[in-house]
Length: 123
Image: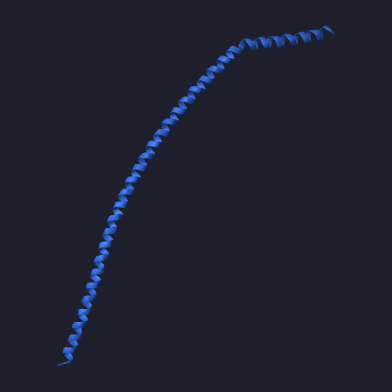
């Protein structure tokens, strides 16, 4: 083996040893960075989850308010429809009464016209 080859091998070993030592030395700092980053991510996630939960609560309250308004609207509409049905029924009954009365009056008019014709023909 030539001195250059031996120097190359020793250089590689020294470089790998230096990299290993640097890796071991900076590993705690890397762990600290990882833990700090994970803590920040966890804090942000919890804050985001809290915001989402608050938004969900707000939406639930809004939906319940809309449901309450809809129930009131439905009750009012049903009440108005019932009142209108009563009014329509009363109007129909009155119309039928007027139609019967009208038929009676037409019959009476026909009788009177017959009497008038009879009286005119009897002169």
